[in-house]
Amino acid sequence: MKTVSHTDQATIEAIIRKCDICFIGVVTPENQPYVLPMNFGYEEGLIYLHSAPEGRVIRALEQKADICITFSTDHALAFQHPEVACSYRMKSKSVVAFGRVAFVDDMDEKRKALDIIMRQYSDKTFSYSDPAVRNVKIWKVAVDDISCKEFGAPHERYKPQ
Image (cartoon, rainbow, N blue to C red; front, side):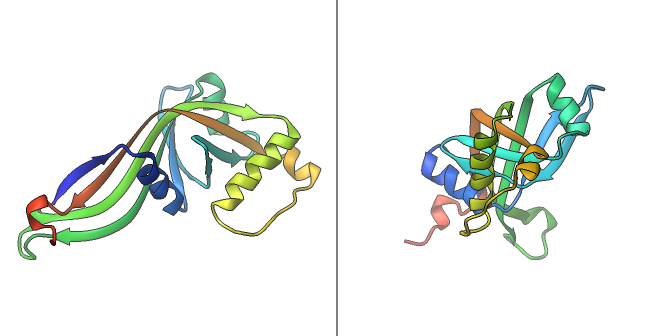
């Protein structure tokens, strides 16, 4: 088994779309790392997130808007020999993206972002009341750097012909 890096956009987007949550990492004003699981939406190279309008993560992002977002899927335990502990490995596929958060204030753009987020989870069409839209913090992340890896991929010499 080996680790394979993927660079093609179709593979990266397929992994992102398969995930039901992502993990975001920021640095707090106290200079501590802070990681949270979050729901998300993805469209055309932009990642959308939503949260309460206030809190620890918002304070962190208001001070420093840099963010790391990680997606991980297809987790499966694999081994080369069942009696050899160091031959065990967790197979998975992951995408790690870096960017900067821009908070969205425009009501129409917030609704569009909410639609993108909801499309990650449902084919339904939704409507959002003005008070609900005003009370949600929408994050838009333009991806500056992205990497994608597949862990535990079969080695070339063991791939079926």
